[in-house]
Image (tube, rainbow, N blue to C red; front, side):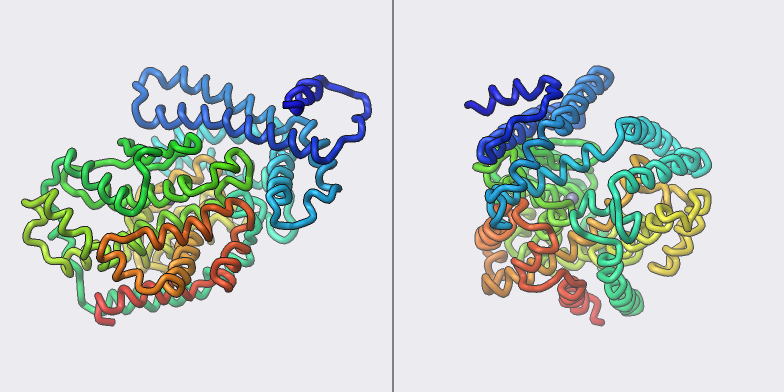
Length: 523
Ligand code: ZN
């Protein structure tokens, strides 16, 4: 390919004025560079996956060196000034005229990536990485010993660095906008606050009704002995049933489940097993398989370019939440799946009734820990974190006052007071790595999932009748076409309007939650 020769030449620090570029050739070179960088990055994915699944403990130091070498080289590739020249040439050409053409989409996203990578001074990137790993180690210890004071100094540093990062990236209205935009391109603090405010109010009313209904699920019917090999078989069966392709993926064991993509045809899911309960592993697998289905559905023809990539964390989470909750916790799914689960665990589930199992897997009650929260209360855990991290980033809340603010806000939102910081502000890993702006994407994922699901039901007819027969292809085909295949063609908010005809709103999620929980709790 001629583009290769050009790349070599460009790598020399040519101080001379660049010859006039041909936009088509410039675009071809950008494509080539983008694909090579994706293949390069995917080597890091294999190493990262291995690190979290099979690598022996003593391999950690060398793996760290491998990964940091790759990260450094990848950063060099991303910030090569040649990219700036090529982009400038293509941007002023007719190639990008049609806003949603492959070329326009790729150029828009390459520009975004290049600006992000070059706006951050090297010193800041290094400080973030160093303080992030220091923060992680201190957080692990502080959480273990429930010692917020030990974590506070590094948290102060992390907040200061995140503010510096926001300023380097640039923002117009709110400093937090710059941090949010890293994970949910185009979203602003104001928009998210407008989405969350009515959600918070309506959820509070729904949860109050549930609490005062006096009706309770009996989750103890789910406690039993579930041999791990059979759990693994059932998890694979569930992921395969919803359409995950095991010729293009795997399921392995890890401590903190995740989904990682090596490239087209290779998507890795992970889960963890508890012999006393199959439920965490099963719903965890459905969640990660939802992420995996998205990645398996990206267009391989566009691999390594934005056009073939996923949009945002919020949209990714909408896929995992939809399969885990809106499908996997539906009564129709259990009509289909309970007979299979009974066959796998005859002693534990043999005599269990569909309605009792359905109620038990949908139990809703205020609790302290986000990752264990049910579909309704989960969103208030996010509202709390969103509110506090804005206060931290905008300087109205001092790190030292975080435990008190956490406790007070949790009492307001869920009527609970955390008995310790371990079960309060030290429970999540995110802030220890300066990942401010990440939390709201979880709740946005729920909102997107509900809005997409409502539209799919309108387009596809009686989805429940299909789920009850184990038919998930119509829904998956719909998601493939509307959400997976378009890649980054649209920004998240735009995709929502294209797919559903409406702006993202809290209403579909509220309709969904009320529709499910009101009959269960008789409220
Ligand atoms: Zn997820």
